[in-house]
Length: 372
Ligand code: PMP
Image (cartoon, rainbow, N blue to C red; front, side):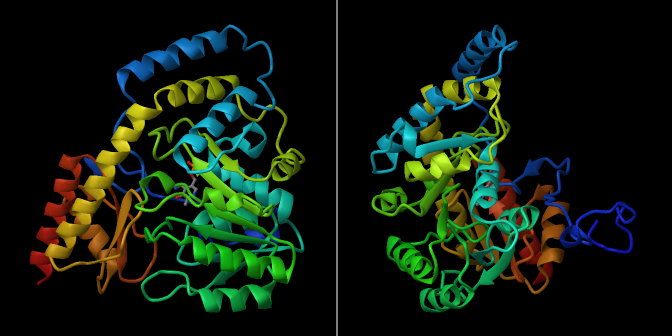
């Protein structure tokens, strides 16, 4: 789809900046073990499924009406969850929710980016930061990382000073590398970004619950331009729900109202998310299991002689392969789908159930034998 000579939309008057580009596209292949999109491998527990059915039934009785446009009950419960788990007290006015954190990020770029403005991220990172920038007409600049995939703070501060971006993305833990960013780095980048021009700094904590380190959320205190973005797709095991949220100064929440579509969050979505939040403790117990599995994958891959990037997420970046795409294919031939994010030499595997992880580890062991 990325080839400009064969795009099916060649004859359509699509915007110049979209011409010849490829859409986001993790392969959805029918393979026994799918560890490629950082999903939670555990289906929602049955009592929660029943509770969702109850709450959705109630919501269905009112589907003739538009949903609560401001999602107040949901934002209040999300605020309670953050207050309880992220080390900082936030209220309803600090929290905003949308259909997945991708929509949250899109709303932020529609509000604070846009034509004539630029966003910056530190690559390799979550590819949608650049793609949503493009989709909202925001220019994109890639800042540097070191060889171990941490952010090179001095180089990043220099890049911010030179490029003067309007929006800065800091992904922690970073996708696809798993690297957490420390609070000191966020503060230096925030200060650099404010010195260059008053810009918005977005900390994407989609994988925050899986980190060995505490959330960066407390940093929003006294920093009106800092936004922390979260999702229920990973820790809550609810990727199909499409519920993301942000925490920030109330003025940021007010500002995104300018671009959100009216009634963007359906009553069914709000009801389902509220049911899931009632079962937070059960879901966070799964997170603990996944963290242990993630650490086991790291240990076992290293024992096989693989290089592994330190991970604070529910996935692990491993390598190094002379031809990472060939390695991706070889692992697939053993029935396990991992992700080739296009980082030369490296692949990424999502922590699954213990049995899925065993299948993955066996596959890597086998391909290392085949190629040695
Ligand atoms: N941020 C990061 C870093 C991600 O990896 C993802 C999903 N892969 C998202 C945001 C978006 O997730 P969602 O829209 O499901 O909340």
